[in-house]
Amino acid sequence: MTDKSLIQFPWGSLRRFNTYAHYCQQTYGTRLQKLSIDAGFTCPNRDGKVGTGGCTYCVNDAFNPSYCLPTKSITQQIDEGIEFHQFRYRRATKYIAYFQAYSNTYKDIAALKQLYGEALAHPQISGISVGTRPDCVDEEKIAYLSELAQTHFVSIEYGIESCYNRTLAAINRGHTYETAVEAIRMTADKGLFIAVHIILGLPHETRQEMLAEASLLSALPINSLKLHQLQLLKNTVMEREFQQHPSDFHLFSLEEYIDFVIDFLELLRPDIIIERLSGEAPPRYLAHSSWGLIRADQVLMQIERRMEERDTWQGKFYRRS
Image (cartoon, rainbow, N blue to C red; front, top):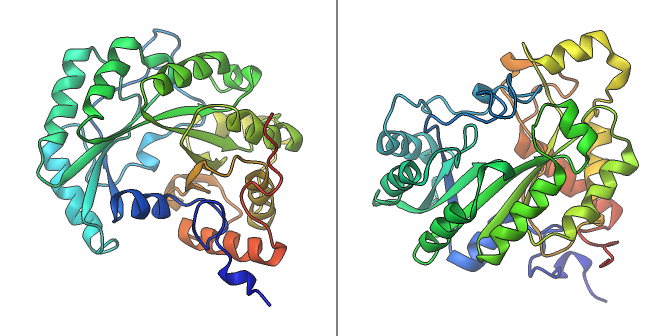
C-alpha cells in the first residue's frame, strides 16, 4: 500500500502547494532571503498623476521593517537588513534586495539604474525584486530589467489587488485590470520572473468572484503569487468606510480564511509558485482583528494541516481554459 504522505505533487515536493522555498532550493540550491528596501518612491495615486491619497487600505509603515528608511542609503539598508534577518533565517546564504515600499519603478530610467545598480553592487546581493504597479512600467524599463536578469535574479512584483475594475476604482488604485494584464504580458515577453499580489476580502466582492480570480490569474503568464487577507489598518480611508458601512465588508475569521484560501488554491494553476498565503501587520496598526496575535507562519501551518485533513492540494480542481 502506498503511503500518501510520501507522494510527491506535480512541483516535485511533498508539500501540498508549490512553495517559494521549494522553488529556491530546486533552482538556486538555497533560500533566497528578501531584504526590504525603502528607496524613497511614491505612487501615481498619491502625487496627483492619477489621484491623491493612495489606496484606501494602505499604510506602508505597517509592513516596512524598522531598518527601512529612505534617509538611509541602499547599501546601509542592505547591511542592516542582513543583520536583522540573521537570527530568524540563519540558513540564508543568498539575499535579494526587495524594493518594496510604494511603486519602485516610478522614476526615470536613470534614477532606477542608480538605485538598482547600488543594490546589485553589494557583495551579498544575488538579485533584486521590484514591487510596483502595472501602470508604472514601460518598454524601456522592462528592457532594462531584462538586461539585469541576464546576470542576476530579477523579479517584478505587480500589485493587482483585484481583478475587478469596480473594486479597483473603489479602493482608489487608479488603474484597471486590463492595465495589469497588458503589463504582465509585456513583462512575460521579456522573460522576466513575474509575481502578483491579490487581496482577498475587499468590499463588495462575493465569495464566487474571489474564487474566480484563481482562474483569471491562472490564465496569465505569471510565475508566483502572494495572497493577503484584507486587514483594516488605523487612520485609513477604508477604516472610516468600515465604521460608516460595516455591512459592506466581510472580514474573514481565521477558520473561515483557512478553508477559503484552500478552496482558492484548488482552482489555481499548479505551476504558480506561492510566496505568501496571508498578510501580517503589527497589532498597533490594526483597526480590527479577529485573528489575535497569530503570526503568518502559524497560519501557514494551520493551512497545511487543514489541506492534509481535506486530502487536497494546489490545482486539484484546476482546469485549463
